[in-house]
Each structure stands twice: as C-alpha cells, then as structure tokens.
Length: 119
Image 1 (cartoon, rainbow, N blue to C red):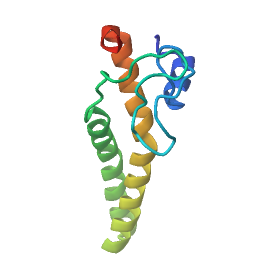
Image 2 (image 1 turned 120 degrees about the vertical axis):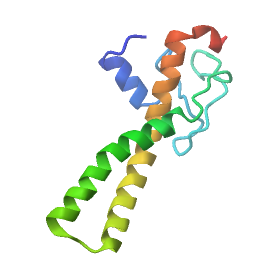
Image 3 (image 1 turned 30 degrees about the vertical axis):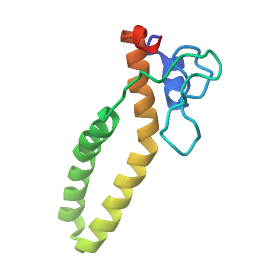
Image 4 (image 1 turned 90 degrees about the vertical axis):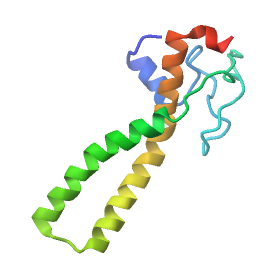
C-alpha cells in the first residue's frame, strides 16, 4: 500500500487496507473494529492501534489550538468562559472527527509494514 491519493481516500473512508472496499469499523458511530474485513476476510483481531491515534491527536491539536487561543486572547481579550466554551468545543469536535481516520491510518501502516500480523 503506497500513500497515494487513492490510499488517502481509503483511509478517510475507513476501509480495509488490503482490498480498500470492506468497512474497517462495525458501525459508522464507533471505533470498534470488525473482526475481519467483510469483503476480503482480512483478520483485524491482531491489529493494535492502542493509544497511538489519541496521543497523535492530543499533540497535533494542542500545537494548533493553543497558539490560536493565545492569539485570540491578545487580540480581543474575551472572557474566560468564552475560551472554555470555544476551545473546548473545537477540540472535542476535531478529536471526534479525526479519531477514526487516524486509527485507520495506523492500521494501514501496520498492514503495510507488518502484514504477518493480519494472518
């Protein structure tokens, strides 16, 4: 699996890294993996994304949102409650939106570099 535009679309759609057609997750609202790909029967039981996607999101979103919050504070000096609501909401929405694709990416990397894990 090369990281080209087709692979990126597959990762964003949360599809199987092998056949690029079967769903990786049991439903569209959870991050619970299927036991195997419904299309090609690739076994997902041994794949282990662990906390990698969450840690990645914490670091990236922290690096993006903290400078924005500081800039807003110096530019407009809004009340503290506005910071809490604004940045808390933005962080929560971005985390929930990005967690599934990032986990799909980690699983795709595992499939690329350690395909024996999926046997």
